[in-house]
Image (tube, rainbow, N blue to C red):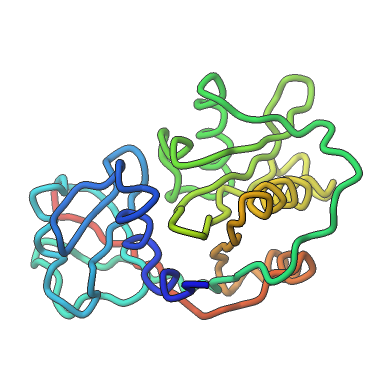
Length: 228
């Protein structure tokens, strides 16, 4: 298993499964605006990140994952660092007796997906993030109350993301059901599931460990702002 791809996940995704969403140069790339606010360098310790300047808009926020380059352009400012546990699925979760209530989300759900995830986890999901992979949801009386899907995808690996439940519907096991459905789908295709979770989110980490995920490493998401 080529786990080294996970050390620079955005670059690995942008140069394999998500190459169609990439903009940039041979040394630095970003996801298209409106899809995902992630950038990456082929070699994080190189100076190549500055090559992305023509593709960045004034006032834009984006993320660098892993190691910061040795120098950022003077009009870019690191605003926040979020240390995360990168967790890899070591054993498939228990099969569910039924997937009843789980629905495949599509274009008609784009607006409600965006509203739900930004209510619970703002900043990492754009209107077109759903184009990056498969998203499942659970609805109650026609309202989307929980969702989970795929974000960065690379050869042999797929990241679980946008795992969220509306605050009025927590405690019902929705997240676990959705994660299991996605992981089983990955297993059928020979893909390994992984995810990132804030080190401070003890509750989520315990759930993922219970489901068979193991921490592989600590990796930071740096939020950077381009001066307007």
